[in-house]
Length: 109
Image (tube, rainbow, N blue to C red):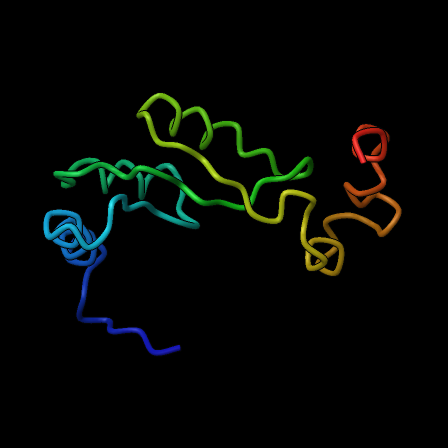
């Protein structure tokens, strides 16, 4: 992956807003950011984020981030909603503690 360190998040956000104005995209959002970055974006955005995509599962609820998104009318979409394999590999849980083994998940399945 190549990152251009000369381009700020704010510049990138304004470029995405221009895509909306040109009718090339309908909605824009953010991914993998915390509450502070959302505050930053809201401080300069002419078009607020429509969606926040973030890792969220039974072992990573992110209640503060979810609350902030709701308070600002930003929809949330979760990825790794049953936790990623890396969560177990990084010591976040044992294989037996995988969210896939939770009684509620088994019942729903």
